Image (tube, rainbow, N blue to C red; front, side):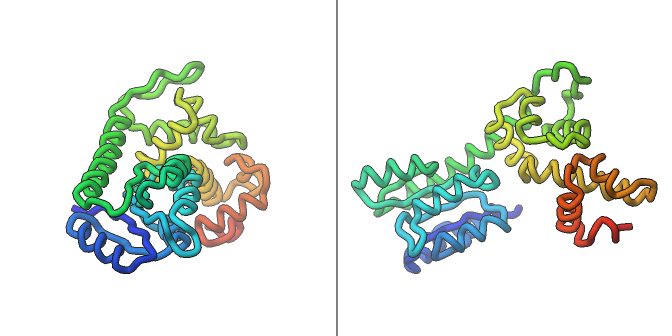
Length: 249
């Protein structure tokens, strides 16, 4: 079974080595010395949890926390912030910026290990709960098959509205009878990608299919899959498939 990956961020090599040595038996550990590099790291990897020192070089741990939690794509990653003892303002700031847990240094490794386990366990339980949850039938539309998974329902909704240029996370959340933040978190958790990415990918796959038929103009296909701008359609298509729509066959 593949180990979950946790990211540890500290400007102190000794701290990185100590924490890495402690957790590497249970998790795949990535050790990073600065917040800016850590933010780049989460863009390309599936990180289950982050432990960050509050005091880092250049970008401090609080700024790192704020930037991570303000990014819709990665705000759901649990973050434990290690801060100075008896600094109430630091603790308040960490929680205001979205840290899931604030722990004062020196940290008890027994407590830190318990916090990591608790956060990861609760996240797994949340995923299981969402998978089992059944939704109300959507009014004014053909109801969903309740046996379908959450991801299948979202994909079906996207297909139904794919030609609508106003198709958005807000619209999908309304159709699913959920608040936008809850829908976003659930989609990210269960579908392993953001709703924005799901919409864009569905549009482009449909476009590729229509292009392959050889029966439609590119301008018509662009409209059919919900792009108002042919230039944006071409840009997104090339980013997805590596070639321009006109060269796709």
